[in-house]
Length: 355
Image (cartoon, rainbow, N blue to C red):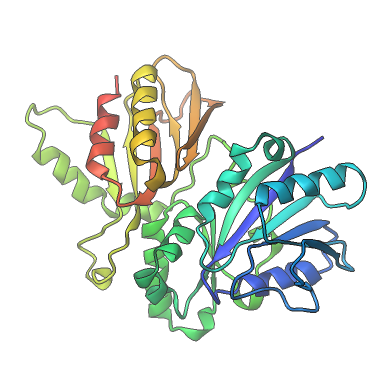
């Protein structure tokens, strides 16, 4: 039986998650979606949709959706839903989990990888984060949870864009890209995002594409080239390029110093598989709790196929990707998103793993 695609819907308090979720519940889309509201906090679906009387329950909607309240262990709840589905008691073909506005989505995402029964029934499709255009700048300044929610995202939906001017929206968009360059950004006002912007994004699946915003990749390239050449004592040209997201030269955003940030490693030289495996394992052991998301497409010495890897905190996996094309430029590209990660340690270590 095919795995059940699952989406984590997150975002800070008041961002518009529940508005989007209501639209998913009420729209006549022909999909059977189990919506799980995880750990009720300050916001919840309206009483007429979910009656929260303190017990776990499932409410079936007239459009084929079901909505499930979960106050306890998410692993237990997902496993129970799967067993009831297999027994024919309920019917659904995908899951959307809404977290509370103050939740760190990391443990929710890890749920899909740390339990065998959950992993046997569910596939984590993507983490979708709703961002409040009007209040996000202050929230990102004041709350690490808001930064984590952005950093974990496979897709970012900006809500309430009508409440800010074009300059404010551009500044927010630029900041979101610096925190998480791999998540596409679109707008979702009044929950109006098409379902294609929320479901079946395949953001967590291993594949041979690493989506990173092109502007992010080129923004610091000139600075980093200058840095590498200035320190290249032996005169050789080193094909290692790194792009950081501190953008200290960007005066417009200099007042915002985010603990959650991203950087990219690129190289045209192949990796030594054994050295890279040892180094990545050591990174995960030391910095795993601070490594929110990391993903890469790798060129391995002697391999004719790409190697794709990704991880969440201490959980890391890899798989073989497509074969390198005859005319394709071969090289590795890796993105790391985390809290106060020592970029220089990562970059120097990865360089030592190159052939």
